[in-house]
Amino acid sequence: MDLSLLKALSEADAIASSEQEVRQILLEEADRLQKEVRFDGLGSVLIRLNESTGPKVMICAHMDEVGFMVRSISREGAIDVLPVGNVRMAARQLQPVRITTREECKIPGLLDGDRQGNDVSAMRVDIGARSYDEVMQAGIRPGDRVTFDTTFQVLPHQRVMGKAFDDRLGCYLLVTLLRELHDAELPAEVWLVASSSEEVGLRGGQPLPARCRRTSPLCWIPPAGRKT
Image (cartoon, rainbow, N blue to C red; front, top):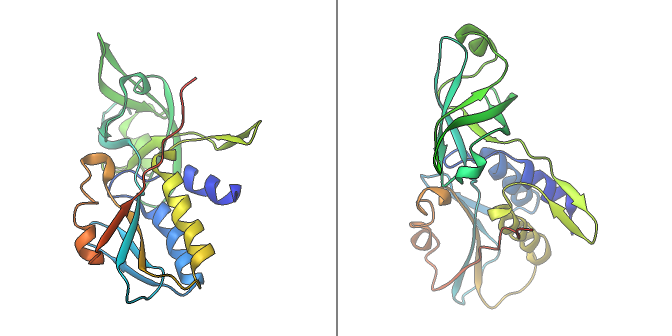
């Protein structure tokens, strides 16, 4: 297993419609192997693995992860955020996060929210700022993406820990297939597809079969891991 690749994919920050960090990893690999690449209007990446007169097969994984988006900034420097995707209630309080600015700077902070029963609302990120101006000076603006600040780690017994394994493991598979089969003679035309915006209602995956003009679909979404 290429742990450096898996680490890069896991630590990339990519909420729905802002998947450029994951997309760049895939594009660099496709460019290195001189593969045809297409895009759709939502930002999905379609890589043609080979040419064939056989059936067309699509292997798909999604690039995005659950996270948050900056909604507004208060006069006191509190950064109000909205969830993007189905973020579990237990993960909405006292969690380390990082904000990616439009200049691609990473600003660490602490996510918290107001709990009422099982519901957590009014979520905000504290970066230590004491005013609106201090947040502005950090380069943070409404619309910036917020992700969990989780470091990829290798555990004993050939296991790993990190964020966004749903579906960066799938993206890892796409790169692995690209590397291992890039010059293979296959009985089908294979498209390796990294879709956008899966975590917000499968939006990015819906138009992809038509884009590939596939006749034999294959969609692989791995398990995210296990609870202990």
